[in-house]
Image (cartoon, rainbow, N blue to C red; front, top):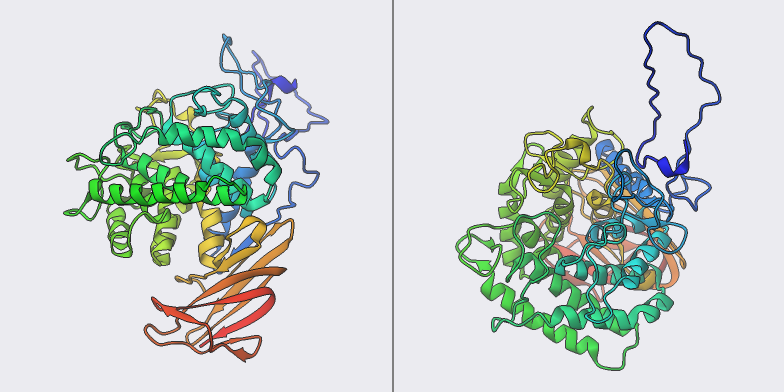
Length: 529
C-alpha cells in the first residue's frame, strides 16, 4: 500500500475477499510497517519506567506511554482534510523536523497544544524523547499571528483559530519543554513570540473585577466558553506563574518575573472572590449565579495552586459527586467522561494528599477501558459516554459517529505522569532536574518504583511500605540537589528517619504529617519508622 494511504493507529491488516464462488487464497511475504516514533531503531527503548504492586496500574501506566509513542509520527504524514471525495490521505506536512507529537494516532494527526498539557509531562517520564514536542511547539510559533500575538488553536491541517485557552496552552507547553530539556536556544529563538503572546492574552484582562474576558471561545469540547469563564481564569493564572519562571530562565532584564507574579497574585484574588461558590464549596463555571460547577476549573484550581488548603479539600470532595462506576462525568460536557479533564482531576486528588481517591478514579476510568474487550486493551481512549458506549462527543461535533472517536489519544495519558510524580513521588523542579523533589504517597500499594532520564543522568526512586516502617531508595545525578517529603508512619507522631544509616535530626520541617528536608545528589537508602 502506498505511504499516502497510511492508516495511523492501526497495528493489524484486515484482508477482504469478495467472490461469487469458493476460491483458494495464499498469502506470502506479508508485512506491516509501523510509522510511529520514526527516529527510534528500537521501539522498546523507553527512557522511563514504572512498576508497583498493582498490575492494573502498571498496565495503565504503559498504556499511556504506548499511546504517546503512537502519537509521535513522521512530519510528512499529516491527514488531508479537504478536497477528498472519498477515501483518505495521510501525506501532508505537519511541521518542522523529522518527528512530531500529534493528538491522536488516527485522528486528528495534528498538533493540539491543549492536549500537550497532559501529553508532554507523560512523555517526559516515559518515552523521554522530547524532539517531537519541540517540533510541535515550533509549529505553533511558526504559525503565530505576528500582528496580534495570537497562537492558533491547532496546527496544520486544521489550523483553527479563536481559542484563548489553547493559546495559553502553547505558552504552558513552552515552560514544560524548557523544564524538561533546558533548551535555552529554543527559548531564546521564540522569546519575542512568547512576549507577544503574553501581551495578547493579558490584554484581555479588562473587567473591573480583574478577571480575563474570554473572547476566543473555542476549547477542549466543553459546551460553554467565553465571558469570565473560570477554567480560562485558572489557565491564565498558571500561564502567568510559569511565565514568571520562564522569564528568569531567559535571564530577562525587564523585571517580567515580578510583573507576571504580581498579576498572578491579583488574578488569584479575583478568581476566589468572584468565581467561588461558598454555599456549594467549589468554583462556579463563571462569575455569575450559575449552578454549574465544572470538573475542569475545579481540578485545575487545586493542581495550579489557585486556592488555599481548606478550599482545595472541599473541591476534592465535591468532585467525587460526578463519579460513576466507570469514571467521572464532566458537568460542562454532560453525559461524557472526558479522559483529558479527568487527567487533571486525578492529579488534584494527589495534591491534597488523597492518593486512595486518585487511584480509585484511575482504576474506575482507565481500568474500565483497558479491560474492555471492545477497546484496544493497550492504549488510552479520547473519551466515552457515561452509559459505557464509545460515542464520546456524539452531540458535540462528532455527529453521532462512534468510529470518529480516537482510541489512542495522548491527552488521556494523565495516569502515566501522575503515578510517577505522585505515587513514587519523583519529579524535577528546575531544568533537567538540577533540582528535584521526592514525595511518595502509598495509598493501598505495597511497593512502587519509577525512573526517567534527562541529559544530566538518570533519576530513580523506589519504596516499600510495611506496617511499622517503610524504606525509600533513590539515585539522582551528582551535582543536583532536592527535597525529600516523607509521610509519617503513624499520624501525628514524628518518625525516626535514617538516611544511609545516619539519623536525620536537623533542618527538618514537620508539617501536615510529613517531614521535609534537603539532600544533595547521590544514592541513598532511607528508613522511616
